[in-house]
Length: 54
Image (cartoon, rainbow, N blue to C red; front, side, top):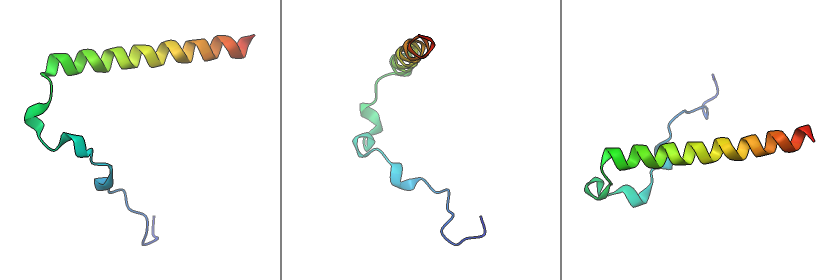
């Protein structure tokens, strides 16, 4: 961490499609989309885990 290039700034990760925050879906829609993505990722991971056992 003493190096001069050790920066935790993530300003470069800004999503340019989110410039107008008024265009975002309502929070309940966002949370449902997040839940669906997480459940899909978990299902995919379970498939990988089953494949590794076989």
